[in-house]
Image 1 (cartoon, helix red, strand yellow):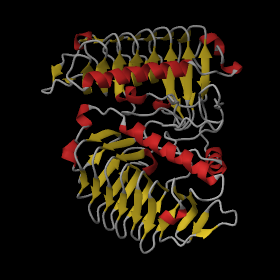
Image 2 (cartoon, rainbow, N blue to C red):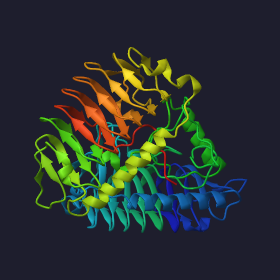
Image 3 (cartoon, helix red, strand yellow):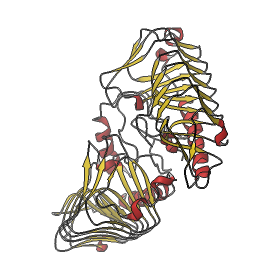
Length: 510
């Protein structure tokens, strides 16, 4: 719940739900908690802490575990600080978040950030927020962060290079990754975590972590420490298509036995089925992203951003673009979002370069999964009339949908379809989702071309190596992320969410 490199203090008393720890310093840096050492001397307890208290001078394996946790904290901070936000999410309202209602996304600030009045974050329980700040974050007294629509504190990350001050009786939600210090004034509270590279001070404050060993945030970060369970390098084993996997994207720490046991207990209780998630990164900011062009004839309707790179805006045809005054993006009456191209003004080109890289990485990751034998070349590639539960399905034969396909599962279940050839949907067919299944949890990795027939309807994320053709009146609830061209013919493309992670567990570049 609280991890610090310089000390944790409280005056007079506070209430913390979760573990607290300091490193590389001794337990003397934890003041005001009236610690009682455990008989093993591996940790201490306090009547103010519903959890354990750890310090670098406690008995093994505590010191080494804390060293790993501190490293993970620093890695998480660096990762969150390194994201590239869209221009419209930069220095929003000159840093004044008071009275704002913000949907999920990546927001960056080079100016001080203040909350003189309440801030509302509105989104579902799978939506994610990251706030990057090169300066301070100050919440005024009696203010609060309000979560609506099912938004979770565990999906909100505040990366703050300066100090954090949460005012008297103010209430904060989310994970604080703090470079300098974090001060919680009298009666303040937090539903989240404080992970600080210097000191944390509490004044009759309440800190409640949303869960132990949880995955947090809108894109995952892993440390390179392997615990033989979740990493994808050659020395570690990662479960695939199992009946349990973690649910939210962002490991903040993997320590040793005491944390690992708690994490495994939390993981085992999750009922999500299917493969681990495919991490889209900033490619998830686009409804359509292409390396070779996007065309429509005569007109289409796209909800979400579209972009091309490394090519110019001339590769986007049929959309009647109008350049923004900043020349960082354009708009179109056919696009409920912005239009980006590599020849637009900075920082658009660099942001698109990152997004294209993320798209290619996602494709490679999805293509590299290993399916169970019984999920290989199912029905010789004919998915028409099938009802499929969550899982990883692979095909070395062309895949067709001459009739409807039903995907049945909950809103946490996942599907990946790997195809070394083409995917063809016949006219008037559709992918049907039942039981709460979400398009954002379905990935189609296609090495060949995708053709969605006249008035056909597709659900999910298309990671396409060759090209994607949507014929007259066709539609998609998902995204088209193509390494060549995308063509639409009076088509409708609606992305399920912006900047989203798909699935429950991220696959990370380590």
